[in-house]
Length: 143
Ligand code: ADP
Image (cartoon, rainbow, N blue to C red; front, side, top):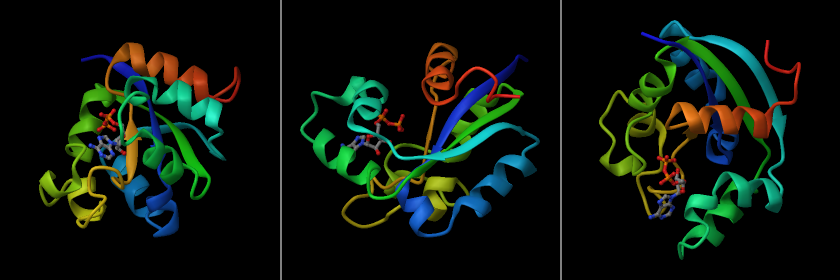
């Protein structure tokens, strides 16, 4: 077991549907601790950095538009093996393929944009978590 911190973004679908508290409660019930939290608008520059691994995909412009529909909420969440465990709580990228009981299965879009409107981003590795926490939180903003 490793004590880790992961970076979560509540995406615009979660913000617009007032799902932030419900999803945050799942993270807290799982025993994870909030270490930092803020609301921010994702600029083109931030999005290009954050989604550099999908920047050449045909769906990237739609993802950028979606991620700018509202400000997002960034969360630094700490716990034992939190990186993998939060990915399990979320379920797969495609909300239609996500099992009931997972966050994406329960709250993600089940219609046309199921692969995009999937409630939350969460870091997928220790390297990604380190880079993403630095991207969204300044020194002193993670407690
Ligand atoms: P994850 O967020 O599950 O780690 P990826 O890093 O592969 O998934 O993709 C980043 C985000 O881009 C996804 O969360 C989703 O919002 C969007 N996305 C991924 N694949 C598609 C797709 N085929 N069509 C539309 N949007 C997608």
